Image (tube, rainbow, N blue to C red; front, side, top):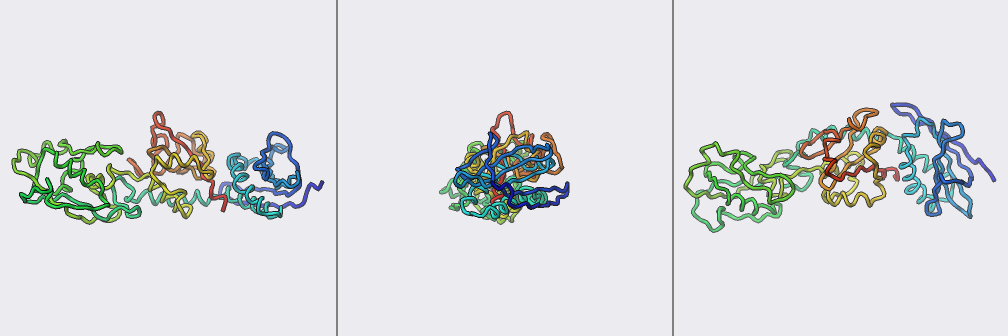
Length: 384
């Protein structure tokens, strides 16, 4: 049986070091437990070479019980940059489908060669560092701010004092029906239950914390006297107070009054999934998925083959190697931001929107003791 058909060498230059990979196309029938047969079409293995300073990787096609393989000799210095989880993905999602379409071994070898070069390329890491730093400065992702990239209205409804005795609409002298503000009625109802009346200031001029509450549940958001309890202007009033809803313009990146954010979302909104989606778009050209909120995204990611789950302790290996890593729970999502080379787990930074928008240590971005957090390596770009 012919052992060697073609040998070629690909040189990859990187800022950290220069690496050499030798590619050999040959006929070979693999043996042993280190090989995995996938759908009777692709086989790959990961075995130290006899010299001890390289790793052999095999990708193959079965035809009449013969395995035609691209054998790749990788230097030991590169072994951590091409971990098994990446090789397995290339075998299952790149090599195997292509081997069903292409008969030429040389074509298969060229595809695998380009795929591995793409896995070693730092361009997406570099884009993440550049675009992430810019997005961290964008106020539109801060809590309760207007972000018109995500259908948020460039206006809100303020409660302006109205000197009227018309009680047809309760505390209001007019009525607004606006689908962009589905929780406006709830805010109005809570304001009507509030004990303190002041008919000289529009509600947006009141202290922002006059509407208390936190979390995702709407019922937690109620008006509270705490921010105004020492201000006599809000006390000892016997007259009735009415308001008129008035549309107030607001521009992208500006902060809504807290009650306005609640009237839009039903809670004092944070935008972690919007931030993660827009960051993905800037890095890869498109979001990696269509977000449906963290809870659904958390359930969906584990079902998609382009995302490989990894352990938290292994994140530095992948993020330092240029791979794109996402951390997600059912209530929050962020992206690993590898600022330094060879960063340790306890020093890892994330970039996110949320209670804190911008950079935050990974260990502070979730309550790991009480929250189920998953970490995913995105590898879908290797199929390009």
